[in-house]
Length: 126
Image (cartoon, one colour):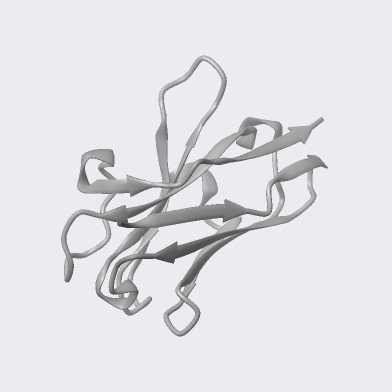
């Protein structure tokens, strides 16, 4: 059974930084691409970033390019999202997720992922 646990959310002012972490267990970690999604109040969940199994290929949604950096540590079975220059529009619950099948490139599609964490709240005040 796959388990994902996010941490690192919080309340910060615009322009600040946060680092989210996701610990994954129950799957051969290095074989699977991982992703971050977020859901703001009253909105649908949206793609933020994803990374392939080796960490060599990453994807970002346009609104976070140049501000967020995704990474993974295949020895510690963890993934991180470094978020810099945060904006009020980044306020959301952030979820990490694992893709359904191994050996695939990272995906922006929510349907490509079958296991999700419980989410961590990020609130950015103006």
